[in-house]
Length: 195
Image 1 (tube, one colour):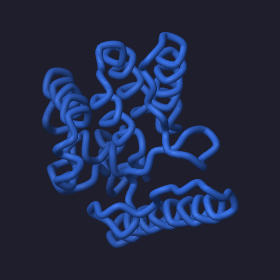
Image 2 (cartoon, one colour):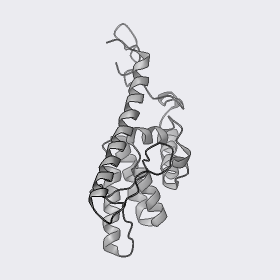
Image 3 (cartoon, one colour):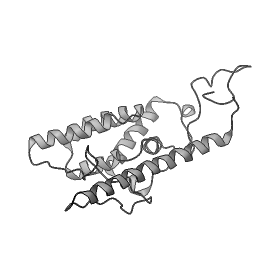
Image 4 (tube, helix red, strand yellow):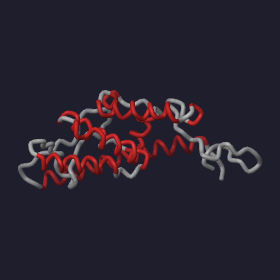
């Protein structure tokens, strides 16, 4: 298999385009469902850093904004369980572990604004969120100002500094492309990682 230096760049752009398309299709679905039910309005587009915002929070049915009701213990328990599930079951193992552990430790001490900030972080796309948390890419200002994102990023970077050597990390602004077998040298060794 030949290595093409443009393949990783193309793959990253394709991933971002697919994520944007998924968000746009989800928002179209919301518009159709909202117009089908009379008397209910839903904000879909918000002016953030992209043409379709990833800051739209939904409940399980994807038709109504998430209601944050901390008035009684039952509604708190349901909300905490829902957010804990969303943080542990993202489908991206590293984020499942990092976000799930952080949310489990901090959710009971959060107020309504903290929960809204957490929901905004949970609404971000996995590849982008992981690159922003690990410092591979610079996050947009709207994300950087989020207190939950800042706290999780601080924890991730602290763990990286304490438990990994600099050689094993991506340089800021560049994706991590080295593989576990980079140490092999010789005739059968890979040209670059993961080949």
